[in-house]
Amino acid sequence: MPVHDWTRVDAGIFHAFRYFWIYQISAALNRGLLPPAYYALSEQTAVGIRRECNHQVVAMVEVVSPGDNNTQNGLNLFVRRARQALAAGIHLLLVDLFPPSASGPQGIHGAVWSKDCGEDFSLPADKSVTCVAYVSGPRTEAFIELLAVGETLPDMPLFLAPDAYISVPLEATYQSAWEDLPAFWRNVLTSATNPADEP
Image 1: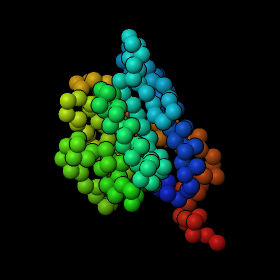
Image 2 (image 1 turned 90 degrees about the vertical axis):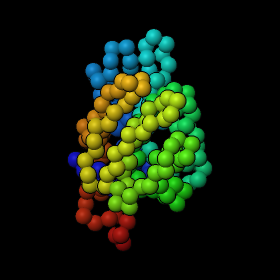
Image 3 (image 1 turned 90 degrees about the horizontal axis):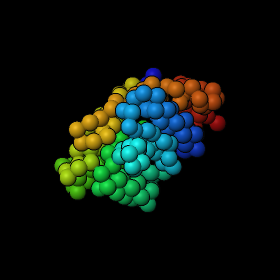
């Protein structure tokens, strides 16, 4: 299923879909994708992966919302959270389905992956969907997949340790979440005309 253009609906509709998707990711991880000593919980803004021996978060999956990038304050808060997680040894998988904004012209990854994290990053004009797996450590690493709206989401690595990861089925969980979205909004997102252009 191709990634939809979520700019065609208001943020509240995407937030509803985002909650469905976060649940589907968490459920898929708990249904056998995680090793036995780990579990996933849907938390306030992300799926947190915990290790049973101490129940500490070791990794997070974050589906970026419009508010994380539409204002400078929202972007700053998101970047601070992401960097704090990485500094605390928490590995991170970010999925951003939205084009860059004036606040973050290189998208969320461009803001997180500033000169503090490594080399410069430039988002191609024709690839606005960004999936990034970050490996926390002395020097943060990033594995990036860039897509255009209309392309299929890849499975992405989610690191549980610097040398161990699982594969997160973004496409399959996206499809499951899509089926939970009301038919009216699925029709809006797949129609040939943009509802914003109608009188």
